[in-house]
Length: 222
Ligand code: C5P
Image (cartoon, rainbow, N blue to C red):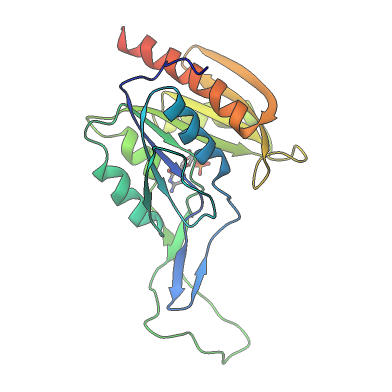
């Protein structure tokens, strides 16, 4: 019996990878499965929230009663997120956004010719930081996948991107994280932190949302 801790709140969640075109038939992307974001969407809905799930290309069924917005590139994901900002109470960014995109997308298929090929990439917008910098910014929750100095890097990321909360995971831990059904998270906020031990992404999503609800209410009451 899920407590209705998020009843009446609008939550926007990004999930999955983005895909950045190189030419009409090729792209660069990453192995993000979208599972963590989908698990959070499901848990948020069960906790009474109205959920919009903005996702890159993933192979997952849409959680019941969540509104799903499919996008491909980082720029499209940012546009979709911004479009859903008015009336958003909590923004949770689980997407593995490609940091760079091709400076120019070739109009035609890039032909095989010389032995070397050089492509120029330019930085993608940081979706989470852009949302957090808005004058009407919602309560923002980011993720930090780190392979070392997990706590220091996560806290620095939270500060730099002006987030209310960050959920860090150590990607060197075997059988957890990317593409796995299990994960472990260490959640940080201004003035506190809590380690959420290894468990299914669904169980972790539920406990993460309890901390989100508590800090959201804490911020509101200030
Ligand atoms: O800087 P880093 O990529 O490690 O930050 C991770 C957090 O920022 C995640 O919450 C991710 O969804 C978000 N992010 C984003 N847009 C980017 C890069 C990261 O929203 N271009």
